Length: 455
Image (cartoon, rainbow, N blue to C red; front, side):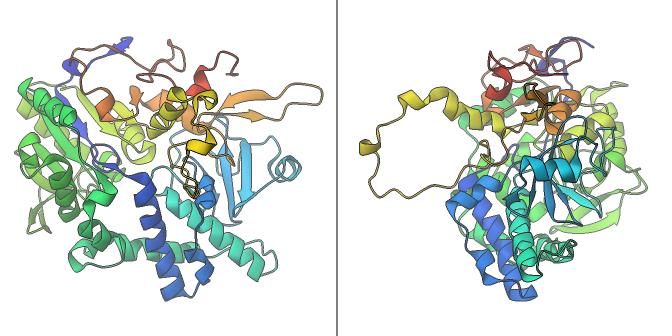
């Protein structure tokens, strides 16, 4: 495979919507998501009202890439070889001794060496994106509450209530019916929760179109919510930018399912209509599958193998399936790189003296894209060495997946919008260094001079 990647070489450019083209104001959207689930648990399922009270410090628990073991209520951070680096029971972190006793140096029982293992199963749940993360804090606090209530019980049965809360707030009709807390609040004040696309990104999208690229929008959001987001971030004429819009795509199934399992459907007034035997022309569709889409892209480009690149923020729903099942190029939107930016700009010695800061400024919640004190870096961590040896640093399972399935990783689309389309990015590949595919800079955790990471 070539060492470099360029958008100029692609025939088709596809985008996920949430947290990719549409960036959220995380300090506002995270409490909204948390509250939408917590209110349901308290009011409908009789959980403790204390779940509704969240302090700024509580948000430090949130870290992308954690696995929740649904049987025992433990949260785990995995190394690239499937061993457990850190763990908590609910929000209570395990000590090294308890961790060693519970997990030792063995692979976690649900780990599959094929790094394409499912992110959702009846036994565990992986927290993969910013819609998920507030749920991690909520579930951890539910485990705390149940452990206390039931004198340290060992098994838990709360997940069905979490699923009911998700269904209540996000079901297909929720937007139209003003159901739950999430959609009514976003509709009421979109500017509080969403960032408009900067002019540079809008100009870049038009530049791609003018260069003859076919533009796709493939989102698992339903059409009514998709329209609200796109009108807010791109303007009322957003549909002119995209040749094909696919909503309710139900990723990752969009990539992994066969056409007869997930046919395309046309929409009328945001209601799904009959299934289509194939996809014959550009337009706005619902559900669908990558196989029929690719057949249409062949017709539109006149090429037997058009080259597609897909931008997304979720390894589970976007990057892994687009690469693994469709062999598309993939650009991972990784806001953890953005979380590094403040640290790069402002070293501790450069920070403002305390007397100049607002005297009564209360503690602020940790942005979800910055490192957690409890869980450490998203990218690397140390494993306890044998006696009399130094601790060694290893890649996390998440970090390994980034370099395995992403072509490149960027903090936001804005970060590349002013580059020429033929700019040559160094791609992730086995022949390049592990940090080569990060643009514009590798994560600080991976680029410190004094860090030597084991393979």
